[in-house]
Length: 86
Image 1 (cartoon, helix red, strand yellow):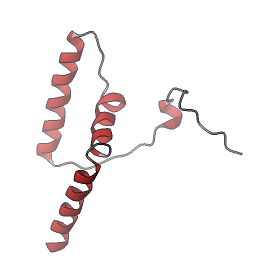
Image 2: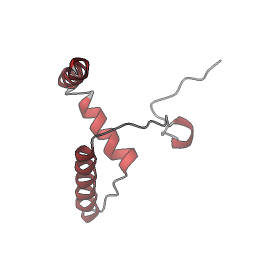
Image 3: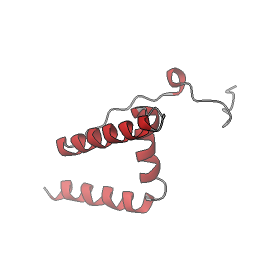
């Protein structure tokens, strides 16, 4: 029997993390790093520690698949069609 996870329990990265590797274009990678570095510096001035996997990437994906879900799916469709046409 599998115990159900409670939303009140904190995430245990070692036990709960699904390792994922994704490809991004070099320009996107640079934008990701620049944006992360700037946010990290801004938040540090406010006394907040920004972690890339725990906060930054999670925020990107929550927005992309939350409030912008339909736009994200449409962009994914466009990219897939571009590859199919090549």
